[in-house]
Image (cartoon, rainbow, N blue to C red; front, side):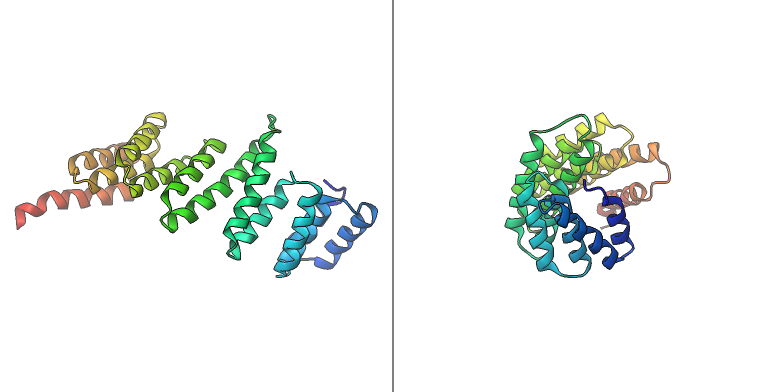
Length: 236
């Protein structure tokens, strides 16, 4: 990272663009092949609403250093924002492959950054009902960041939407067994049972959630819904 990167970052955070650009230009005068400087220049233009210049400088950064994670992630996000989804995915996957060959014990934060990006892609695929791709991206995100358990909840939803109900239930059951106090897994498993007409099984999941957290409104609301559903045939 360039020597003045903290000062540049502080200026950018405070929207002090003139001061930030001065430091960046000074760096480029001394080192025209500074990938970090082009990255910061790209961020500067991004804050100024200049998408074209942002993309241009981020690409320069990656041309100098194809493993520049921040530039790759930033460029991928911007390309996604302007609708160039295929280009965004290519940029991200190339950077992901580069970093994968250089893992050390200090790479957890990098893994999490890539996990977030895979999660964004998965959600995008899910939104457009491309469930196979969504499942694949959720899987990559979960491998990179096993601590974010919600990723597996989302993957289970994608399995269910795809029609793989047994696989969805296995995912949630495994998650529930691994993290017995993780209430969202029980709630989602209950919803899956309920959608299949297994009301009693759904109630058991939501009751177990309330045993862990008695004031959980979501579990209590679903439990009341299930009880009303059981009573409905009696009132017709």
